[in-house]
Image (cartoon, chains in turn purple, red):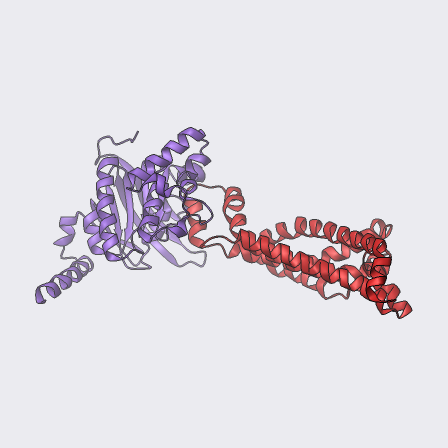
Length: 260
Length: 211
């Protein structure tokens, strides 16, 4: 079902000198040029307000570039029908944005329903999706979001984004609101899931260990500009001040552990 | 003659006036909802329209009700029938709470939910009907409840232009200085208002979105 072909070579998302400024003129993001290859997991790492989320929203056209362009599957996002583009891309956000008035089943089957799937296919897909994120369908499909724990909500958020099997998945601090242990657990599940599904994933985070663990490449964003692109190995040994600062913060934690 | 005797003696008349009253209020509320909810959505969507629309509804609210009826009497088509005048005036009064609550309900929807809806490729119309309106239903309903209770009270004034309703008793009672007549209008109106308030607040609580 998935379009996992030769991961690594083919560009699926491309930023060409893309930027976004507010109507008032303030630039949130400038001159970003960047290629995301099919099947890779690119992490946008940076502080709050650095422009990571803006970059992410440029991909599914929740924000339209004011400078340059962003291409998805070789086509400028502005040439796509915005609705078709977004149905082609899964989207997971920190607060999950689950609809509180929908059951888990209605939430995860939203996009298939919008796409007009047959009722039978929607029902079996909902069960498939819950199995995919490790939740028991019989137990959870009829529940409402407020009856779920944070970790369960996040899993449902991922399931909902994967519902129509989109080739691209965008995640905005997907595990940020979880307690550290649950976060670790879900990250691991997520890695296993990604190994099976081979989606192209762009994740926004400010957490260095998350970036190193999940990313096949790390894009460092600072002050609305792309500071550099690294493999996790390169990032760990970078002499570049900003990257080094992130790594140092990781080491500080290590030193604390050794001191105990 | 004691009060109860009066009520049983005039039972038919009181029932008749009560039904007229309910009809006036019902027609008013249907109109006010049909106009107020779309206006509320418009206010939520286009914040720059908020001041002119809410301002106009506010002004309507401040015109003394008797005067408003008087202003509407000479209006061509409206003035031909007393009910038309009454229902138009009552609708103008009922609009403000409905517009305000609809707008507040929609702007109060969790931005994360709206963002997720957009990100998943829902159209603006789908977001409105499947997300924003269902989630603001209890707030909208609270506005409708306030407007209904208000309308039930103000509708007694409709009798001034001959539109009927429970106000008939009150006006007659005032003219004849007959307290029983006044109560024959006032008590059923109060009971109607309490009943509407109760029923609509039950509905409102049932539609409260879970959190």
